[in-house]
Image 1 (cartoon, rainbow, N blue to C red):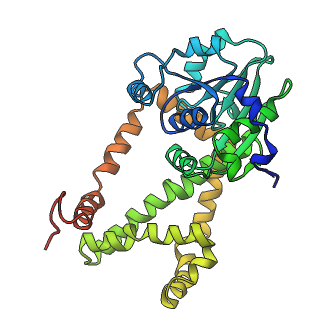
Image 2: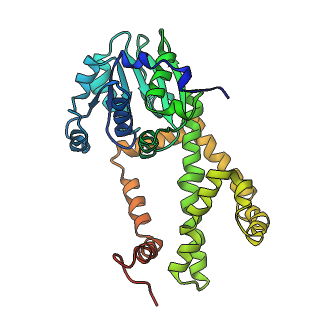
Image 3: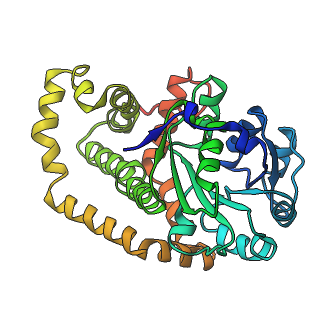
Length: 334
């Protein structure tokens, strides 16, 4: 793995450009603020009626339209949501692109699956921080940074060096800028989200909680066992790795992991993970998600509503109220 650091990048390259951050959501706000603090000439570009416009103004930016940004700026940083980006690009960016500009992505979804096909005369790069925007901003303000993946889709001259300059400006050079590709970043990100970070973890928690409650444990106590303590263990794994986490738990818990983990995550589950990876690599998931978005998100709305209505959420509100001195939420059941 090839990793670069701040010392390997020339900040003067990005400081010589006018940069537009398109979108001010989860990633966009952190990129814009970090760039400004690094001394980069940065504008925030939003579509008409954007929900985050007021937040951008309160942070000291004067939002411009995406079309204006495309006409005025050298580097266009695509921080709009994956599903919104293709239509936004077609309507407000593509008609105004000129030779020598750089289209920069913070996640490879739209480019890798070819929902966006930039013209040959435009540089295409990616700087993808390995973490949410909130963490990127917090790390920067504390003098640190998050690692990132850097990839080049098209380099008509100087694009790769500019990408590393940008990555260093948002603080990633302090932690490590990893050379990779759009394919590796996109497929790895989607796969990890679906089988572990979002899909796998949440369904494991809910299912384990349901079984424990069915066995007679009060819902709030099952919440502690199956959800609340996940953070404690994940923090240990983050700090020490899995083997290091073992040194911080009881022998009983460690032995239970070895003999029970394979009963839960068995060969059938591994086959299901392989199927998920196949859907990601083939583009099947990407096509399904874009079709859902273009239909108005009816299935997403139903799934979101069902998840919010799961009884584990009521137990969670009670536990959080307890931990907050009983100031909010329902009392614990007797």
